[in-house]
Image: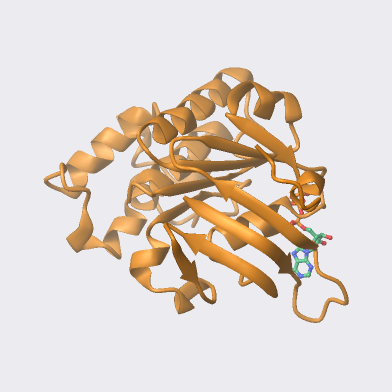
Amino acid sequence: MLVLDDLAVRYPGEPRPVFAGLTLTAHARLTTGVHAPSGSGKTTLLKTAALLLAPEHGNVTLDGSAVNGAGYAVPRDVRRKVGIVFQSPRSSTDGRLTLRQIICAPLSHDRGRLRPRHKDTAELVAQLTEQVQLSDDLLDRLPHQVSDGQLQRACLARALALDPKVLICDEPTAMLDAPTTAVIMRLLRAHADAGAAVLVASHDLPLLDATCDHAASLAELQSGDEVT
Ligand SMILES: Nc1ncnc2c1ncn2[C@@H]1O[C@H](COP(=O)(O)OP(=O)(O)OP(=O)(O)O)[C@@H](O)[C@H]1O
């Protein structure tokens, strides 16, 4: 479970925080949606939830333990509990790496911690690619040789590689067609059903209402009322 309590986040040199007084709980086994218009702070919120940005004020608690700082200041064992899928698969992948290398990237930092039921990386990659419905022949292609939807599925496989307890997705279906959107949202549901907390932000309120256990707007999260 991830708890964000009374958060304010301000970028260096900016006069005002992007948001303040924001409280949100992402529960295990549930998908939580955050709805907000473009430019209002969704990505900032999700980067804070993913322990990539430190709040100016407030507390981030993961599985009952307070998290201090952000990025490499956070111990690896804590960081690896959180996976993130960014809005743009093109800007969140290295164009020189094949899809297989992209999916394997978290494992190269975490060799000793492959998920227990997998004997080796190849077996895990095979399972992840099947899960996200990527065909084998795409794995040795570079990002410019696949579609946005295929690359976003590789990004989701990368985020799932360490079996994160908290999976965070920033507009994961932006630019995707309806069938690919349905695949991605079903995968997020399945990861929640397997025990994770899933936090999704989107400008698409009907999508969040249709696919999340509960959804709230960024404004509601700052209202001081408990959002359920
Ligand atoms: N690194 C940064 N430095 C200063 N300001 C920033 C930085 N990144 C974002 N901002 C500002 O913070 C505000 C929120 O940006 P953010 O990217 O979180 O919004 P968003 O809701 O995710 O937008 P979109 O849906 O368009 O991606 C915007 O006003 C943006 O200009």
